[in-house]
Length: 157
Ligand code: CO
Image (cartoon, rainbow, N blue to C red; front, top):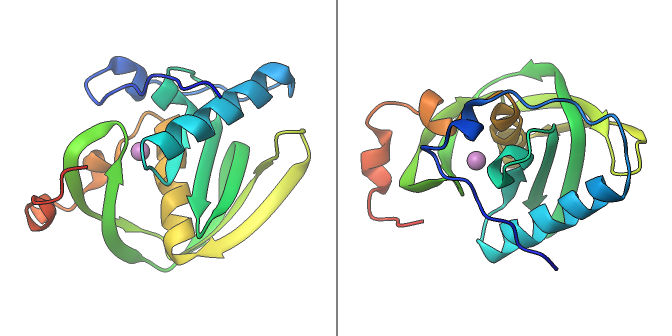
């Protein structure tokens, strides 16, 4: 197990666009395993590679104890909308509401380079949108409904 340092909000790395993974090798496996350990240790439910300083299109989301790894994810369909609270391992002490699609279809690859397509909704769709935004240099605070953070100002994550 190897923990990596989580890059925080004011670091410009988080504003850069990540490149696709081309080689599915041991380095990728190591990155995914380290990202997962780092996320769990920090009590997060999602993480994107730029958050550990790697500008590659790699994300992990965990919901209901189910880990989902996605490489080079692309949202191919989206519909509906939902508004709900978000936070981020790279943004200290702020939680706020963000509008996201309710249903999405995502295409990408698993850690072995196998193509995968996933349709999901609700919290998982929200979490995937949040992580995919990281790959484009976008933070949830960019999209947060103004003033909504006040509702959650007691939470200190
Ligand atoms: Co985040």
